[in-house]
View 1 (cartoon, rainbow, N blue to C red):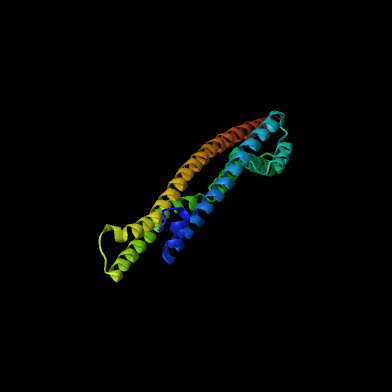
View 2 (cartoon, rainbow, N blue to C red):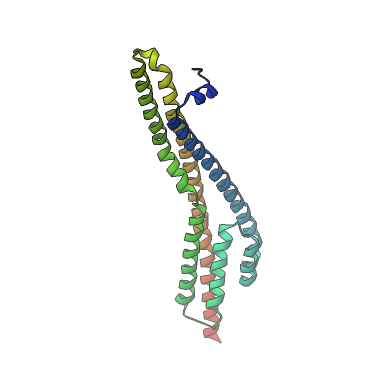
Length: 231
């Protein structure tokens, strides 16, 4: 038996080849999810910054409808969707004239909360798969190793031989699946932890933006109520 990748693959049994194939699919899934999430996070950060710069003056001037409409240009921004939900709810609640302050603020806060949860769920999409790969890949590899060692000892029993030399090639072949499984798991766990930390950062940014927009709308609501009381 040649101790090369092609040589070991050629001498692998059906179970070992099936296990390595499954681990290969897991690694492809890990790479695909990681690439897709990375693109999503980069786009979200870039568009959120652009949207924040765009609506700064609009919010100061009280042009809430224009600020809400501008969010449609930034489909990849989580912050744009949260702010749009808050502004749309404020505009909807304010249409019928002056209302108790808690009605408008409560409606805005609920809209912000629901939209934030929805966006965070979208940001975590695929991360559960990475966690599953990280936790199961070593066991998948170990499954192949166990069958490989069984086959090695069965072959030794049939030949009637003994000693380490008779089974060393088979054991080496069997251990490959464990090594591959551990390698896939390490990469998946590292990527899962990295993207989880990115999501946590996005959560903080979103919460801060939500608090800021709610504060702006509270001040605007109080101002409107004061003007209505004086008129």
